[in-house]
Image (cartoon, rainbow, N blue to C red; front, top):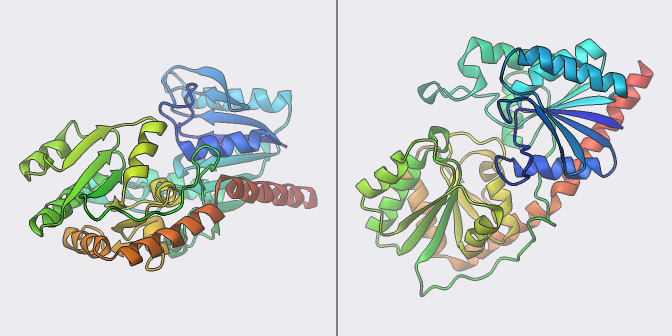
Length: 371
């Protein structure tokens, strides 16, 4: 098949910087068996093309009449050899995929992977916050023959808005992120806690730091490593200093994959503090590496609780600290959670993801022929 993927970005030519790992893993697997063209709407400001993992990336760019450029480039590639399906990942990209599908009479598959279904007005997060965002999502959903999501929690959000979805988890590439079985922690050293995520309001590192302060006040020995791109210009780090956490907290910034894996391998627990997270990859990556998660009730955390993760209410720092301390004090339970999470993450890896999408592409093609 010839496939068109429409994405906002995450497909830099370097393959390492400004990328979305699960997106690269999917592209790599699809390109082994199909002709894949990726239309990136906002990877970089200027238009450009480059090869990536066997696929061809068309960066549309944000300069000039970029929408016209998107439609022209797509049409030219479609004339060179017709596409069989359009696959949009994220709702904003889905609205343009819908228009491309209608214009060229192509079936569209839409995967909702972010804040499409929520409105966090106080931080301006989510497509439901604005009339424009709500309209874009309606357009994306109406233009798609099939809609997928990565977690049951996202499926429930979609159900509330009358959107029928199918479950396709975006899994980890085990050849790129090798499995490591859970292992016992050393009780004689401080617990190694890890948080991975961009420093921005939806990730709610304020709740994370409040929980860390509560752990310290309770006398729990720990070190907290925080990795992620800082969009808040040092505000989270200043808050950590203000809470007197600089002695137990380390900020690593945005890490390359090898450095991130080293932190994960050293961790005893992953902490998630997000207000919303559709399908947090870091929970899967930690699980593959044998590390269980305690976090707010989002994405995989709430879906896997109580057998393979520990979930607490969103924004509840006391509960996050309490459950973290309880799990650190109960090593058999921590290991049981780690083994259950490890098993689930291995079942739904990147190969499984690609196979699910390929099945859907084939079903779309059969439906097209029947039409």
